[in-house]
Image 1 (cartoon, rainbow, N blue to C red):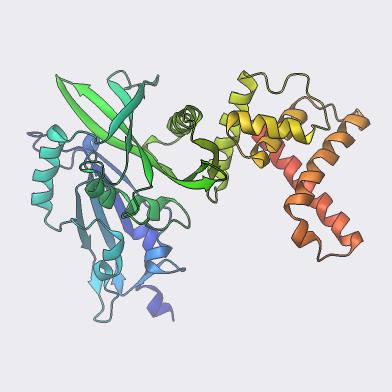
Image 2 (tube, helix red, strand yellow):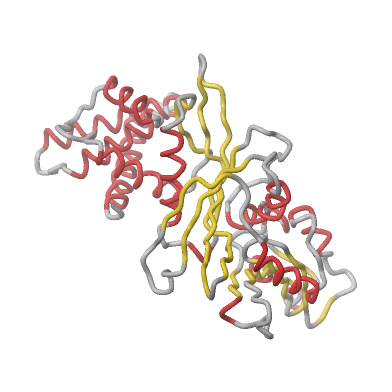
Length: 376
C-alpha cells in the first residue's frame, strides 16, 4: 500500500495556474514580475471527489493564460510515470479552453501580441480607481456582454474553466442561451505610453420571469481572480450590478443562486450599507412588521428574506442584551422567520424537539450575525 502512495498526487496541488503578462522584447518570459502563479481551490469536478491523480512522481501540470486575452497553454512534467498512469490531458480536456495549445514558444508569441493588441469586448459600463502601492497607473473597468457580443463567445470559452477551479459546485453554463448577461471586470494599466488590460473577474446573471410582467435577475457565478481578491473588487462588482438592476424597470428583484459563505458576507455587508445610507433602519425596533419588510424589498429590489436578515442585523447592532424585553422581541423576530423558512423539516419533529431545534438554529444565526457585524 505504501509503495502505491508515492504514485498518488493531489490534483489541486499539481495544477499550477499562471497569469502571464508577456511584455514584448522583455527577453525573459519567466520574469517574476510578469507572471503570477497560484493553485486552484477545486479540481474534484475534473479528477473526482478525492482529487487524486495516479501514476506519476513529482507531477506538475501548468496552465498558462495571457493575463488579458486568456489565450492559454497546457504543459506537464514529472520525474517518473507508470504505464497505467491516468491520462491527464484527456481527463481535463472538456474543462479547458477549446483553443488551448501545447507549444510554449508559440504561446509566448501569442501572449506578447495580445499584451499590446487585446481590448475588452462589450459595452463599457463604468470605471473606478483604488488606492494602494502600485495602483497609480491602474483603472478598473466594467463591461457588459451577452453571448452575441462580438468576440465574447471565444473569450467565455477561455474564461469558464476558472469557475470550475474557484467556485464550488460550479458547472459550465450553456453558451447558446442568449438570455445570459455577463459583467466583466478588467484592469487597464497605462505605462510608457502603452495601455494593456488584465482580466480581474466576472459575474454571470440569468433573468427569470416574475409574474405578471417583470423579471427576477439571478446571480449565478461571481468570481474575482485570486491575485485581485481582498482588495474591494468584489464589492465594487456587486454594487455595479445592483445599481444597474435598480435602474432597470423590468427587473423586480435580485436573487443569488446557492451563495457560499464568502459571497453571502459580501452581499450582506453591501446590502446593509446601502439600506443604512437610505435611512431604512431609522426608528427601528422589534418586531418589524411584515408589510415594512415587503415595502423595503420592493423598493430596493431585494428578496424579502434578505431584507428580513438585514433588519435582524440592524436590530442586533443596537440591541442591549441586558434589556430582556428587547432581546426577547429580537429573538422572536428571528425565530419566526426561521420557523417559516424551515417549516417542512421542523414539522417532522415532535413539539419538544422542534422547540429545541429552533432555539439551536437561532443561537447559531445570532453567533453568525455577531461575526458579520465585525465586518461592517
